[in-house]
Length: 252
Image 1 (cartoon, one colour):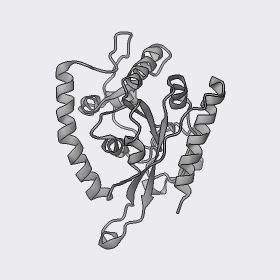
Image 2 (cartoon, helix red, strand yellow):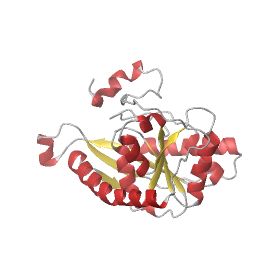
Image 3 (cartoon, one colour):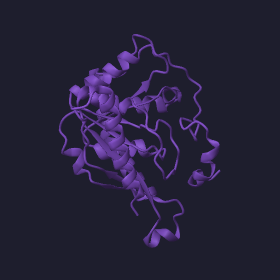
Image 4 (spheres, helix red, strand yellow):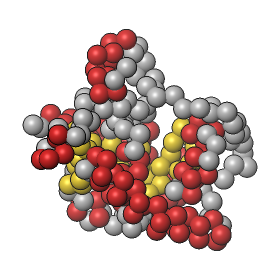
């Protein structure tokens, strides 16, 4: 299957939570009541900050060479100095690195699938880059959400993929889950929509490049409507964010 042609198989995917790419996950982690979602140890933070200093520039160079990666509207992100939630469509295995690059020099925190922490070597790298696993069951969900709320209270940025699953090179916007919007309403923080778009190679690179270039468009912050009750506010915020992102995707 060509990843660029995923639209051809979308009708066969009955569950939009289904991942197109399945990684090898030979390990198993237990998220019990003592699990630390965020490590604030001095040594951990030292290593993490050094990794950021070394890895992010290399990732930027890699993404620039491979995908001619460009960011538009970054002022919409850096102008919000409070805690905030960023959301984006999940359409490329490298888009998590692109999210981190957009948020640099500040650290970006992002919940990710528990299975990603069951991949050898990768599990350690993503933890150092401030990823933390999403509990699969009901237990420990409260601790998980409290961790996110504490990050927002510390004026950190937390990234969500509201579509939940990765569909590489998919050009439409899929249905959103409520998680990010529920937290934004409860903590009264803005959502900053970010949209990945694919562009046909141009210039001399179109002669040698088959896969499309990648652009990240950062849109203006959208705030919860305080005049609505909680349930209505969550749905309203989700709808406004979805509309903003979908309009950007539909732009030629």
